[in-house]
Image 1: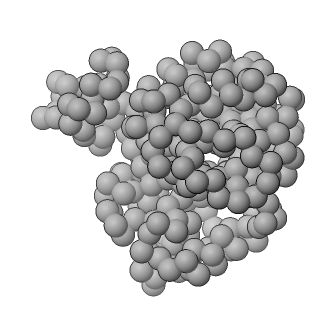
Image 2: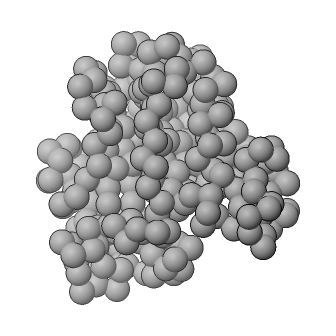
Image 3: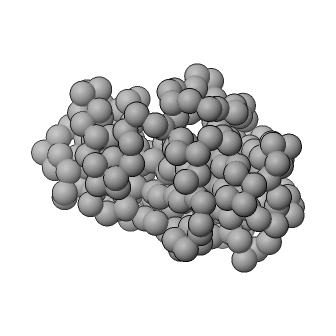
Length: 245
């Protein structure tokens, strides 16, 4: 099973993070949505998604009953959680609870995984264009700080997501971003640089650039990821997880 383990977290004491790939050739290859689809809002039946979660947790050796996920609605609500379950109307989670994994589902949007293991705070945030424009990343990091996190101790991973050359939008979307993150020259329609915008937002919170890791891979270009833009209703969902240990 192909799972991304961010480099910044690999030797980090007190926290770990991971991001799933589609695994189309290894899991459920003949299914309606082939691969390790972890989204209940897809064409896969719930029992198939349940089985995929079990396969994942067996693979990584985490407890399958110790994770919390956001029921994402492309807004900026962030909840402090201390027990497993699904948080409704929520796009961000933070926790102070050791062993509780926080999960964010994506299929072109960015999963932002953050942890300050020294002070015992972790966060996971869903940043599509709406969430990014509303500032979910800096709001989440600021909430982590209010619960004891130190920006100089926070490590952040930003998952594969759609990149600028593939992120064509209308002017109604482009106008919600600073001009320097929108290319209105190279293409027929505006293209937003979501990755650079998120980097700018995170740096503004005081987290050092050396503590931020970006995948750099584009979900729309690479079949190892699910992409809603490329696959439409046939797209599955990947999950980014972070937890304190």
